[in-house]
Amino acid sequence: PQIVVCAVYIHREKIYELIEVFRSMTANIEDDYREINSIFISQFSNQCQN
View (cartoon, rainbow, N blue to C red):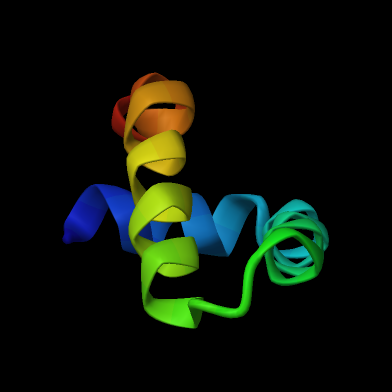
């Protein structure tokens, strides 16, 4: 959870862009956020810890 919050804080604008992309691809918002969170953890955790 901390990693995701930090990623959200650092990459807020980019996150909103991703959310819009996911929304255009599917109507299942819960799956969207689950997928986005896994993307944040894999891509942004290093930046968050530094």
